[in-house]
Amino acid sequence: MMKQYCTPISILCTVTTLLLFAGCRKEIGVIPPKTTQVMPAGSYGEGTDFYLLNEGNMGSNHCSLDYFNHQQGTYALNIYESVNPAATLGLGDVGNDIQIYGGKLYIVVNGSDKVEVLDKTTAVKLCQISIDNCRHLAFWNKKVLITSYDGFVGVVDTSRLQNGAGTVFLDSQIAVGREPEGLAVAGDQLYVANSGGYSPPLYDNTVSVIDLSSQTVTKHIQLGVNLNDVQKDDYGHIIVSARGDYGATAPSFFILNAVTGAQIKHVEIPIENFTIKDSLMYYFTSSYNLQGQQQAVTYETFNLRTLTSTDNSFLSREASAKIKSPYALAVDPNGDKILISDAGDHTSPGSLYWISTDGAIDWQVQTGEVPGHIAFLQYTN
Image (tube, rainbow, N blue to C red):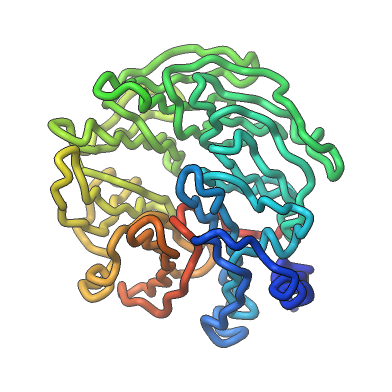
């Protein structure tokens, strides 16, 4: 029998009505708390709950948190303000990443210069980490590692992040390249993508490799321009995406040896976003360039075991035609569903699409503004 947990949904049900009458924030674009039945309760078997972080536009303070409960078949909008009613300004300005580590949920809020630390099961706020211009998260040996566009990786011991700790400051900083974005841990090494995003067309083109035991940079690997995401697979690879310069240099991705950092392959596919499950890397291609010309978006997979493109779309033509601006991409680690968000016009509420193995849309639901990042909630005994 599956163990029962006190989830954000159960808390939401007890406070949503009171909050709606007491008055939520009234700015245009803020989505009030709402729960939608998206599938019959109990119909998703061994699937996984997840959080979705809506970025909101810069300066709007519209960052928000949604939650999907796979047992109840419900999708709840803007749960953070319901679970944490004392947070009168909500999550803050521009959500940039969301990850779960141990018993905590970490949310990077770039424009508000902080990482919110929540209980992973209830979404109750425990404390926050102060870090300027924060971007992305990784974890190693009970430490949280955070990239900052100020040119460093911040390090905090997670044992300090307890309920009531208030604002926690960094334990240390590790200088890397210009405007670092994504990062990934492989053994005792950290791979950090440096973008140089503040100084186009003079983008950075290096990955900084850090020995985490000594917190020192051991090498810089030159790759493509405007590096972005970094992920590790199960085959000893580090995958690094490059956004290019939105002009002559198209987006692409690089495959590195996770131990040595040596480049194994450069794949000249204009990748925009990607996620990994088992041997497959799911990705969609870029839809824009510097001239604003509309590009055709494709939804394909790359086999990381054989290092070959499959040339197969994981999305049906009918489903692809419905998505205006693909943004977040994830695959349920336990179930068989693919999740794609649509940011639409990037100012109105977005949409989340639930895709079956045949590429069709099983259901879709409204999200907050610019639905950007997904974290799956998995319980361990």
